Image (cartoon, rainbow, N blue to C red):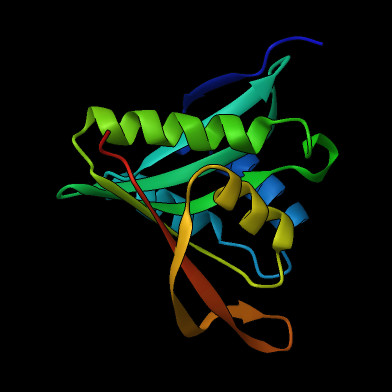
Length: 150
């Protein structure tokens, strides 16, 4: 198996990212949301293997904090450490840009993602009621945080 490589996302990557997003989420982000994030200066990263897009993430960095906005690994490539690798990359970038805390939201209905975050040092700090759209209504978000300073 070859090593998966992480690169920066550009606007030209958005159509391929959108395909993976729609394949993996019942209520996906639109291509326009990804474009708007990149145009706003948020950081997008891709993880590829043999030039095949297997996952991506979107990160917002502000004053002393970063926020994971989206993290997805295509279903055929899950459980191989790719999400952990993307998460570690976002943490490294956040620390390099002087972020001291990293935040994210996760669906309670996604226990595998929540376990990933907990195994990587994130702790639940609150709940946002009715945060996520679902095919049948709304779902809360568990807000998690991790201190980045040593």
